[in-house]
Length: 106
Image (cartoon, rainbow, N blue to C red; front, side, top):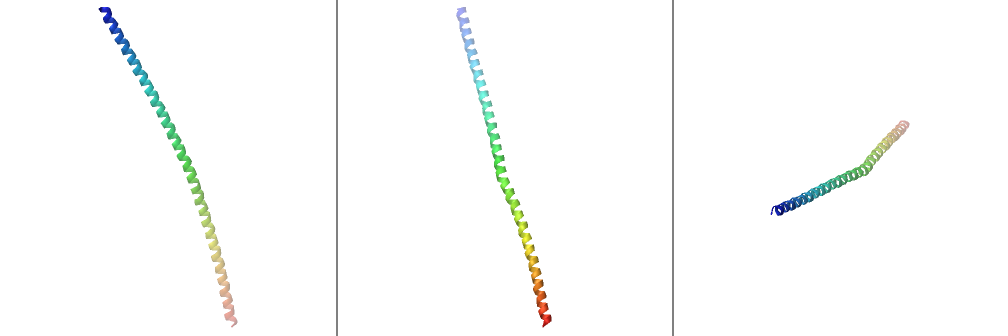
């Protein structure tokens, strides 16, 4: 009877050990899976950040170029307008001088 009890106790202990070991293995597997998930998530985040940075560069650079080109165009247009104004003023002065000369001759 004592031997039977001992056997039962040993079997129960062995079963408990197996269960504990299985639980530990499951825990380890879960932890490893969680770590893998974390790594994957971090990698995805890094990829997203890199993509966003690339998009920002791709979008912002042309915008900056366009702004610079527009500023240059504005400068050129202003210069042209100034030139035209000066030209017109000179022409008007010449016309006025000619009119004055005509009026003086008459």
